[in-house]
Length: 518
Image 1 (cartoon, rainbow, N blue to C red):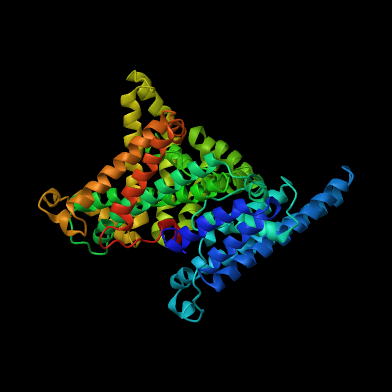
Image 2 (cartoon, helix red, strand yellow; image 1 turned 90 degrees about the vertical axis):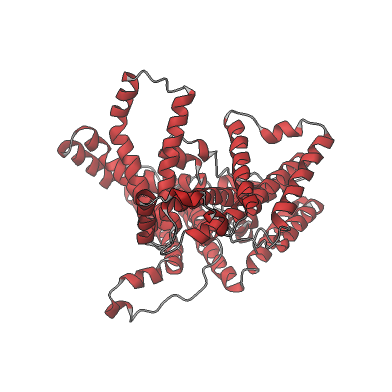
């Protein structure tokens, strides 16, 4: 059930209406029923996979909860018993993680693995022909995060399987996140609520803004991108670069627009989902960019992969060896940089089974490591040149530099395969053919001049809005303080633009959300 379909709009609107008519103690059951309906629309097979992940992680949580209680009941001096409980906890958590990630591997990466094997071996192995469940990566990470938190005794496990199922399957966030944490999300899902007009107002505004970004900007930009970024593209480097700029616009408006819809629908229900974007357009370094882009995935990787890896005994020994044998700054950051490489490699692989995603992860890991190695020299240059790091020109430079690094990395995420990405990048540099930007070629790529202006002005509107947000302006709060007629006028204007330039424009067909494929 696509977010841009009338069926989803009907489901969301119906759920909001019924939610506030339902007695408080039953409201969470209505949300669970809506979530089942949403996921069942994608096929009963997918619903079975979701139920399997829910069952495995719920049972693991119960087992870990009992072991945590047993550990607390043991005398502190009974080291043998404490060690035995710890081993059982590790076994239970590892079993749940292996089962869940094993399913994820089978669905997303098994066929890729078979293709890499020699024909004599790969030809004997069966291929995975099942359709991948909607949002598999997102709900798997969310469920496994819960298991790890219970393993760490961060909170007690949820004993009611239906209540836990709602946490994993809450329908607005199923397609592309954000990846929630149990202690932040579950209490909101299970709470009894009364209608708050501010929640309803802000939710509608946020959802409409998401639909505008997706249906007016992203889906329009996708037409040109799909026409240019192909195998053996006939266009010169300037058109390819132009299409990649449009892809960056498409990707951001598609993904952040989908998250805005998700958070908007949840806010209408009085539920505040985690922020997943914090104005990445204004990042001043690649590290800063990843703190602002897909925030909940980055936080998941930080808490459940980077810290356990970098603070582990093997990495401590590796760091000690590097400081002694390599020395200097490289030796000091060797272990941490290796952990960073692993994290970005996993993030790359998380996006899909393709060498271009592996290269994307390595690209980010390499740039971030290089920035650490060169940081002292960079600071020395800035001091020697007497550059004020708080000045506007310096911030513009840092932002432009970061945008260029992100732009180059996007060749890897958009091209159909790694060799094509490298070929497109080489053509961009070696054969720009700038004349194609002015000889009418752009108008043969599926968009009219009016469409190009809509994308450009839409991207500008998003940038200006986020510029004010970056400066601390609370846009929706500011609008809420205006008169009622002005607020209704703003909503009416958003609906009019969405209808005229999105829903009812000639030949419009909404595309799938890009991150819905992950």
